[in-house]
Image (cartoon, rainbow, N blue to C red; front, side, top):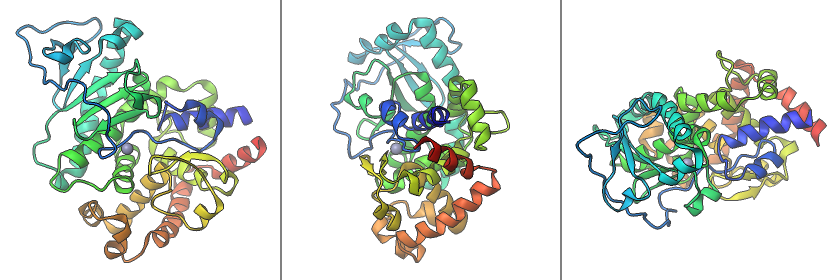
Length: 364
Ligand SMILES: [Zn+2]
């Protein structure tokens, strides 16, 4: 049971961070941050030249979208680009060599089949708070790990450059990309940029795990699920109608598991993008600076369901310290309200927290 529990825990953690897989494997229900945010962006800009299309498209093996030869300084590292309605994909020379051209293109092909539908769905959900025209976002793969951030994060939205960097491999990219795209929308495609940390990641988790289908993540999960993970997902009630781990169920489940008494002392990625140890005091007095990503996303789901999108999204630029002015309650009181809602929601969705708790106790 211990092994099986850890298998699922590791997979759940991978949904947020592949860079610290060892941490995820050793700390059930303790996911890590998925990325760093705009203001934390200190990475040196990497020749952010805007590639221009050339006259003739290039056909790459197994890729049904036409590619173009890139131009400018970045063309050395990213010799090809693929333009879609909502994104410009920059194809890495090193990553193509790392995976082999066919495998690299096959992974990209799978992402392209889902990405636009996911982007459009997120845009539609947040439309009243975004610009009418959303510029295509630049997406770069860095599976070879050139950026230092790839050692810590699963993916990265660079606020100044306004681009997304995908790390590790295509499955990791599939799990992270919609989360990062929500950062792009809410930081860089609005007249009222979202507040960092709590609201930014609560929104990114809520949209990518709960409110939208997230075809990219589901496809990645299906590719990664071995028979034991399927069995465990079924046992805990985390599978969707297609037998895939359901991001919404996983969000609520992870939020419960992280704050469970038996997980006091476990390391997890906090909303402030630091790894910290869960303490009893954190559970007694939860703070918007120390909760986990899944808690933040699930709390936003509760707020939207209770107070409505207009109030919640309309105040995403309000400092969390001022949330009492918006909701009439401070964070701790809202957290207690959310706990009741989350538990009830888990019951409605058939999530078996009792089974997970029993397995965790056996494993300890
Ligand atoms: Zn994030």
